[in-house]
Amino acid sequence: GAVVSQHPSWVICKSGTSVKIECRSLDFQATTMFWYRQFPKQSLMLMATSNEGSKATYEQGVEKDKFLINHASLTLSTLTVTSAHPEDSSFYICSARFRGYTGELFFGEGSRLTVL
Amino acid sequence: AQRVTQPEKLLSVFKGAPVELKCNYSYSGSPELFWYVQYSRQRLQLLLRHISRESIKGFTADLNKGETSFHLKKPFAQEEDSAMYYCALSPGGSNYKLTFGKGTLLTVNP
Image 1 (tube, rainbow over the protein chains, first blue to last red):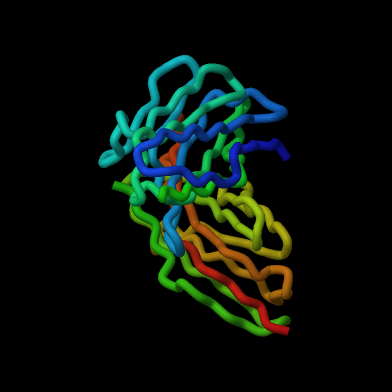
Image 2 (image 1 turned 90 degrees about the vertical axis):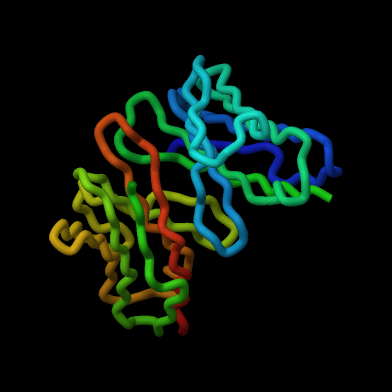
């Protein structure tokens, strides 16, 4: 199947700093990428939908100035957590839909963010 | 609003026993339903979707529109089936956003 790669897999940062997480589709062009957040022992919560070349669409309750999403190319979307605080600590997962969508989304391995 | 409910957080069965993971949904239109699985230390991956009407790794799931359910079943569970299972709903058409249930952790004991 298609491969989606996230980097970094885990990151620890100090409160107040910004952290960037990359999501790449390695062998296909992803017209749409989705960013999720997962708290321990809870489900995935959709944060935003990212379409190549346009602004991301954020879900209700997600601060767009806090979680900056950029989808500059058909193979790369980035999530930047700005001025991170301990409550931003979470598992962030991206998924991608490729151009010839057949109903399946491909997921990255996730990135664990810990804010001290 | 769309909602997916998986009533069981944990499900434990013995190897060879039948297993059923429940999923109910709430959506006014004609959604697409999926089951995703996450094995230990691996990424989330698609197990099956209702429009395919296929059996994957011995699992099947039938969409029951009357009961708004999409339960996942396997007649004889195997130890390697132990994983986290998520039921998910997409509105369909050109809307690909997935809404996930909270997941059910299946443990198959030897």
